[in-house]
Length: 84
Image (cartoon, rainbow, N blue to C red; front, side, top):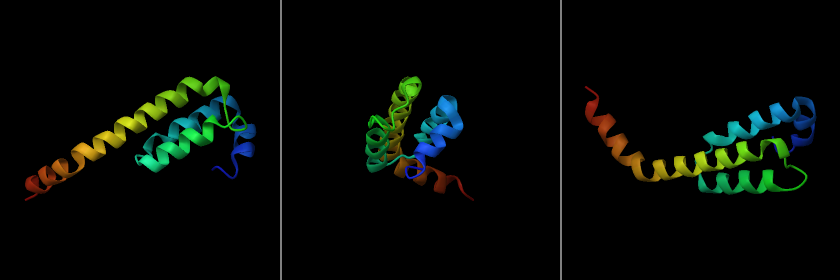
């Protein structure tokens, strides 16, 4: 996606670009959060009309990363205990 961003942005327009940005909310790793933030904050990659969407996406990523760190093991143990 990063390699083809200029073409994707031109082809999809601001609404499509915003949806692509929002799709990164599934990347629940610290390094991916940093990469998404750095990439879309670069002036060449910035989508002005999607600034709010980017901030919301980054917040969702932070929450997901935190949830994963705190709840992954307890949830996994609980699910295993529920299996017959």
